[in-house]
Amino acid sequence: MMEPTREQMLWMYQTMVASRHFEDLIKPAYFEGKQPVFNMAKGPLPGEMHLSDGQEPCAVGVCAHLRPTDAVTATHRPHHIAIAKGVNLNDMASEIFGRANGLSGGRGGHMHLFDPRVNFCCSGIIAQGMGPAVGAAMAAKLRGRDDVAVAFIGEGAANQGAFHETLNLASVWKAPVVFVIEDNAYGISVSKRQATAVEGNAERAAAYAMPGHFVPDNDPDEVFRVAGEAIQRARSGGGPSLIEIETIRLEGHFMGDAEGYRPEGEKTSLQEKDPITRYRARLESTGAAAGDLDALEEDARSRVAAAFDHARQSASPKPDDAFTTVFA
Image (cartoon, rainbow, N blue to C red; front, side, top):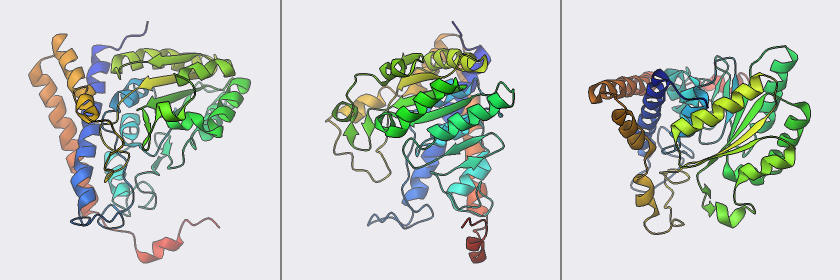
């Protein structure tokens, strides 16, 4: 069984802290100009904003096995995955603030982050990244490289036609790709039980002749183990795998979501399962010094804060930039 080294465990912890702090700084910035009356179009961060609080283990457990030449496609809730894949924090923050020096010159916003330096992209369209992930995997295979691709989706995407079409073709072609379902129990406001016929989406892998794995309890180390074996299988020519991770969404579907669909007490119960708090306790119980972990946290928070300062001080695109890089 593949176990994370101490160095990998500390990297996963620090990366989860960086991801959470990124979201913590997004929250006040997003509400600038949107109060007292909430208007999604106002402020420095207009439009919808989907935070990844609670889902950090999915990103670090998978991305700990990846290299820059491996491709990752992510969802409309992408920040934790982008950070774990190594997307530049300054450029990512600038993109979200719509600055000219952002990843896409400020054109994409938080749901459309693209960084070819580490082969990362995401999309606001449900299950949209699955096909491109298979394409990237096949490109690597045809070039004789052992790079792999990983497609992150939510559990709601498993009910999309693209999910089934992509798994079928990936299996037929024996593509070096891993599909990762982040099951946070809700598709927007609709619970998984209301929308999905099967108990677990990992069961669906059997229909496409590939291994299916379920990772319970949002555990970074268990995600690391299962993802490591699936990625190694893909690198060595074994073909695709499907992984379903039980995770939690500590925030609403989007910022401003009243979350009236949650049962009473659910939010409090989820907060008691905060994966970062639990992982720190595990590290301390296995010998990590509290002072060393504090130093890792401080370093992560400093880098994120510097990225936000960088974004706020950067220039907006010029009006004429609206007519550049347009495909028509």
